[in-house]
Image (cartoon, rainbow over all chains, first blue to last red; front, side):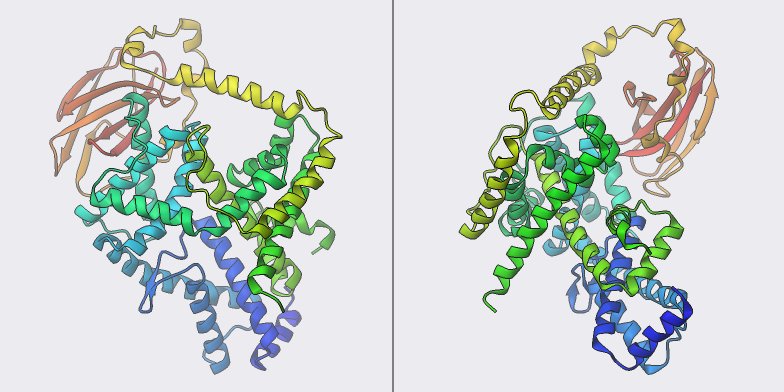
Length: 285
Length: 242
């Protein structure tokens, strides 16, 4: 970004232009989410004095600090790099402070905090196991064993982690161990959570997730009824398994262009249905 | 920033595939482009949804109906049906029997079945595995690194509780030589020593008490070892047998 462009933006911000500030808010959200993904950090594994965070709470706090600092003249952000530096510095400070508090309630067995952990680890474990060609009941059993072990270890041994990344790294060691154990000793096909405190907790978290996650049901219906199996396959391989389009095209024996077109077509259908969902949620204008 | 490539930039950004310098350029562009920001937000939502959907299909027992399935609002059915109808029209243009997709699926399923059979190592079958023939020993495949285990070398799971004196994290030995396992563990005295080949197949699993000596009667190749307790792997290292 050229210096002149940033100065025009800065002038608008200092004049409290609402639209420009709203743009800054969404820019902070995008760059922080992308950074967190790259650094394998969970932005919502935090706990402030107001309570457990949601995906937007760190973003909101970074935005507020930036806005306050800039408008009061305390913060100097004369160019784009200084702006980014300030954003990441704020994010680092907030995460460092609030993750430690999140870790405390994890150790205490707070259900809401464990729900956050479960919701993310569930997806990571699915990807990890699927890469090793483990699916269905076996995958489910390995996940159950791993999350229950994690729960017991963290609570009983009072393990302390500085960052969400360290915590996940520890979990992956357990998952890998359970995976290895599964391949050498056949683990029992349980499919049911055990009747223990932890078992009941994770069963209820899973059921709650199934019951309340509208987004899942919408995407499930779209996948089952609105797009072809081929399009579903492309989306899953591309977004879930992280394959490249050329690899998917070659597996399907279609051209790269054709594959890209099919992916776009599927995305447009999903976007259209999501758009309708939002309009319905907003109600009549 | 050229907008005719917008979709590629956005996809690359969401999938973390842009180079550092391209990411810098794109993020700076996002600051003044509301349309790109909106598309990133939409793309990110779809990305998350497909991720969540993918995860549930992985854990879903094969062939089972989702017992948690709940009734959707009629208008969602309507939207889904409308899109489905559009799709049906398209389907008439496709051959209705063996499409490349179904062919691919069949081949993939066959490969998966074979792989499952070949990688499932039971106690009995482990005893029956003959040593690989000499000509295969020379194959470089036996020395190919396994990124899963490579990443774990040198990482202490619970710092301070286990100190491994021997073997070193990376050690070279000859066929038939003995390997000394020596460690200090603050918690339990007994650990398991697990030896894996570079494909991750377990070749040996022994309950060990420090010090312990093991004869390395394995063909040439790269091997990984782990010291584990009953629930997790505590230390990982590698051995080159030449």
